[in-house]
Image (cartoon, rainbow, N blue to C red; front, side, top):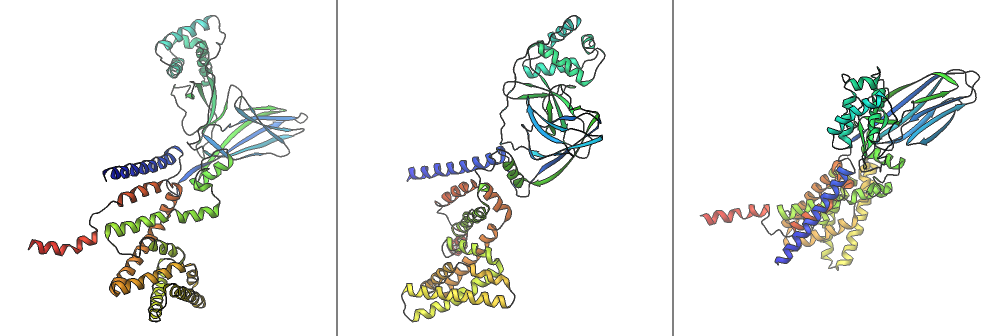
Amino acid sequence: MRSLTLHLKILITILVVLGISVTAYQIFVLGIPVTEDATDDLWNIDAKVEFVANPKDPVKISMFVPPLSRDFVSLNESFISNNYGVSVNRTDGNRKVTWSARRAKGKQTLYYRLVLTKRYSGEKVKVKGPTFRDSIAVEGPEKIAAEALLAPIRQHSADVETFITEAIKRTNNLNDDNVKLLLAGDPSTPHKAKIVELLLSIAHVPVEKVHTIRLVADQPQTPELWLRSFNGNDWLYFNPETGEQGLPSDRLLWWTGDENLITVDGGKKAMVTFSLNNSEMNAIRLAKLTDENTDANFLEYSLYGLPLQTQQTFMIMVMIPIGVLVILILRNLIGLQTLGTFTPVLIALAFRETQLGFGIVLFTIITALGLSLRSYLEHLKLQMLPRLSVVLTFVVVLIAAISLFSHKLGLERGLSVALFPMVILTMTIERLSITWEERGANHALKVAIGTLFAASLAHIIMSVPELIYFVFTFPAILLILVGFMLAMGRYRGYRLTELVRFKAFLKKADQ
């Protein structure tokens, strides 16, 4: 017995831990929303390209566009132009769109439109980058100044991250004579980044420039320069002005390198303006779109990967254990008397079609009439199988009559009674009549009311949209329910109704 108890405890622990672990993985690692009404940001970015074309020259405009290989995923991408050919190429980790035309005249306007959303955290994109670079050639006073700056940088750093941070801070100290020499009167951010790159190259630390767009709605945006270096596992991003490490979450990487955002052949006065706006979309719907537009498997191994019709079936099926749990608590802990465990659950499922109020009325009417018929058949001394057959046929006829009557009265809800489980009703009638004969009318009535109450409560709980979504999205939660059911299976204590029953005996004992 002791070994059996230990075995049960181990089994319960395994089920509960497994259920919690899988659910936590889905929520915290995969990023699956906990509620159905959870939304995620959807960003719409427009890049407007304007230039003046040379009348007699072919036109070729190239512009960097986001690679979308890290934190964001594209849901839609459009290249809008009039009589221009469009091609997209990928080089050195960048993507570049090229518009081309044989002839163009006057002011030209092109558009690049991108709809994107955050990439889910469960989608880990493998990255790689250089871990060594050759020194940039420098001679004369510049070499001496660079080496003078490197000495304290090495002294006050412990790894690549702190080395780069220290180099940026030293470069931004405009009171240092060595910095003044290297900047040569140009304290702009791009020039500072160039000096940082020089210092790091001497130490053989690779670094590259990255240009980002800040995701802020309804504000003019210009590309923002950052520096990044690969530490062997991941890219480290640095602010070239402050040395702060870590790229903010609202930054979209647009392109890397020293090249300009746009190059124009056959034109002049090129200008790019950005406009952004954001909206919200249901998180699960957005996750499905993400799966469709990428090679991600965010929902591949979830119930959302099933066909839509099958999903609707499973939304009902996964709630059956919830209904069973409700009945189990009502019977084992409270002491409510019902016709078994599954009969109330099946009746609760039938209420999904008839709705609760109408379903209770129909159940009461059909059961009462069925009991009357069963009582009459009892006088005929029929065997059980023929008796059940007659009752079943009577239930079918009665359902048909109620449906026809409801239709004539304009009560379309009554038509749904045809979906009421006829076999369940028939067996309910049969079991109630047997209970009536064996235990009396009062007990049969008590059991019928208990069954109807349990079915109604189970239906209400099983119909909660938030609960349906949660169990369907995180089906591993059912393992926790199984563990709880196993624990309740060894409960031998008093039920709530028994405490009320035995209260009188306790009073007599005290007297």
